[in-house]
Amino acid sequence: MSGISTDTHAGGRNRPNPDPPRATAAGERLLRHYRQVAELEEEAFNDLGMSEEAEFRRIPITVNADSLSVWFLDAVSPFLLENRITLEIFVADQEKTIGSLRAGTVAGCIASEKLSVQGFTSTKIGLMRYVMVASPDFSRRWFPNGFDRVSAAKAPIIHFNRDDQLQYRALSQAFGMPQVSPPAHYIPSAEKLAQAVRRGLGYAMMPQVQASPEIESGRLMELDPRSRLDTPLFWYRWSRPSALLERFSEIMLTEGRRILAAADNDLASLAYQ
Image: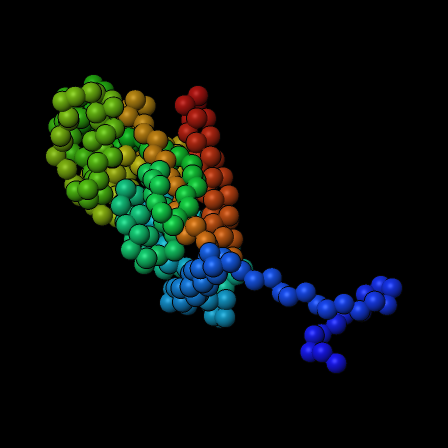
């Protein structure tokens, strides 16, 4: 009997099994590359604490300070609690967060620029609207005749740090050039910056998500609608994300959009009161 294996088909006829399909040389190179990438990804997931076998899985990300302060945790907390996930959050200016993603230290980041970054996917979250605000006492003291170029240049302003250009952009939008350059505080905490504005130390741009309830309560007031700025927010993550990162991304995008849209509606309603 020959060494050729046989298979019985309908009708009782036996025929040799066909040889299994073989990859071409190009196909073998492609399969080899795919296996190498898959192994590297699994190693990266393990290094980052994102292995499916971990009791608590960790997702390292970079977030800008304002998003972290006013909407990000509200958007993702239920998902984290339900799925035994921990976050390692690095804070950076929204124009610089993408550097940590390129360096491979995080699995995702929130950035304000739409860039084409090889190996990563970006999705727009929405717009973070900023408004120029001050306390009523501060406004009465420094802007008795209204908020204009001259008074804005004399009153103290508050920046997050020396890289923070948001206030200058808003002043240029409201008053044009040359640039208004007021005396400045630098307070590198989104929460403490807002607290300083409430205490009357200066005026500043704040996310409307954060400012709307303060304006409604009378603790703060918007100085000039012409200074409103809309900053786009994008979520970047690996182009080949794990199932965990993909689920996290879906929840964060859905809830983040809902929170930002609700804040936009709140500010619009205040304008008609």
